[in-house]
Image 1 (cartoon, rainbow, N blue to C red):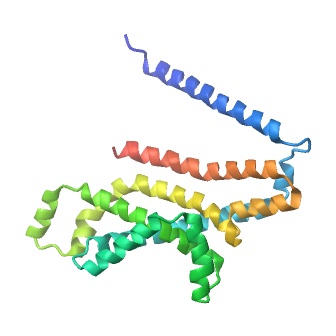
Image 2 (image 1 turned 90 degrees about the vertical axis):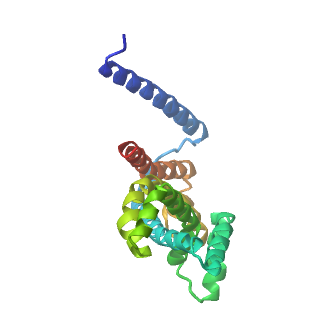
Image 3 (image 1 turned 135 degrees about the vertical axis):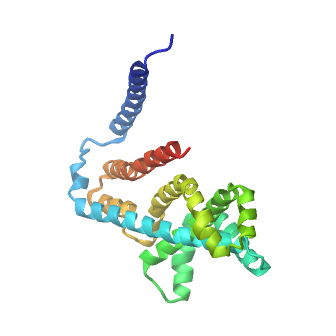
Length: 251
């Protein structure tokens, strides 16, 4: 005889709480072992305005990077599917180069080479450009995977009725692939948020750089990294939960 639904849910909740307690005990143990006698989170919170500004900048940079990365990914996808070999080559070269370049290296190249070459030194904008270029190829693969999942018979029908390329994507393809892309889109947003931490090397005041500044003033290194970790979790965990909900909702 199977267990009642309420009992199964209670058992799962107890197991989850026990598993979470194991991690919490481990984290507390590590913090106690590595922290000094003057461990105090208040030293970090005394600079909460700087910390909040860093968090806000992280979200703004990541949101712009996601938006522009989505546009760039769609352009790369269209170019890769183009009948003109020049456009296909441009897209394929860009995708392969970007996917083979670490984001940290790309940030350096964008800020200290490309920005200097064009006499443009706005580190915020250059940071957004670097992250956009980095996630653009992943967006292109996202479009390709979603569009390839559409039944080929639909394309035959679109050809039969003489749909233009714009009509295909506007009325048939995009509405279907949107629900398929949402989980991966949330994952890419999470990647952009975590990747924005590398912009500290160009002195962009995102949350990682803000914590580094606070640490240089207070020498609260353990507290700073702990707050930094929690800050990123507060941003990325809700995105992860939202992604899982979307996957269950539209599976």
